[in-house]
Image (cartoon, rainbow, N blue to C red; front, side, top):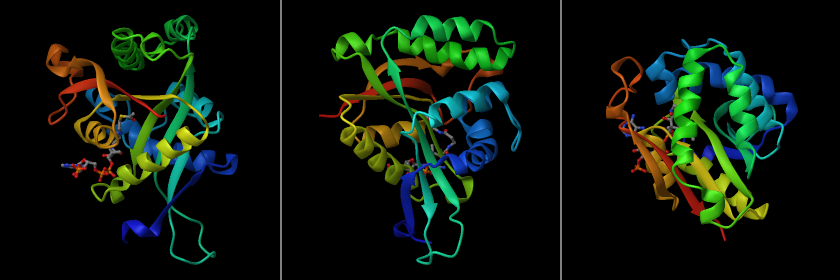
Length: 219
Ligand code: ACO
């Protein structure tokens, strides 16, 4: 299958269950921070992470890359996705309060690191904006990785963000491959946490070296 046989589309509510299923077999287990702490085994569900994904999906800015064999007969397979949400200035306190009520220590470690890297730079102040278009999850089905699909998804997602009139897009890029994708599309590193600083039992495996807060101006 060539890259031209994939199409990026909006995600209708009717496919939210399939999106969660894709994430259980891909992002939940394979994303470097999740994998470092051992959050999920392949196919396992995770209530808090699924709630986080569903609330982002409901915002309506997420995209999926589906296979396209040129017919209208098949139910297109999900090859990859970006889950995108709007992060508003001043939301942090509520989010941190909610995290404190969650019992899952591994989930707390991951989100603790994400908040820590975001606390290093005030993107709202730096870019004089009250909202950020936040690419929260980038995931490609392991069957389709290494063929440029993440790059196709990112080009499409940036286009969606621009068309919707957002000024700034950000992402917490947790591994070397996603960092390459964001860099290729013009994102700059705003802050970084080196994985060598983390305890052995939660450190993401090589080749992943750091967690990067990355951002770019859209207009
Ligand atoms: N080994 C070496 N290089 C690789 C590999 C690999 N296994 N996989 C990708 N790359 C490189 C590619 O060569 C390419 O670099 P280039 O542009 O310089 O040629 C770059 O990484 C991107 O390659 P794509 O083929 O576009 O990426 P892919 O479609 O495989 O998707 C992704 C990358 C999304 C990171 C995928 O590996 C994945 O789903 N991983 C698990 C979940 C994850 O880590 N998501 C990102 C977390 S950050 C976030 O969600 C905001």
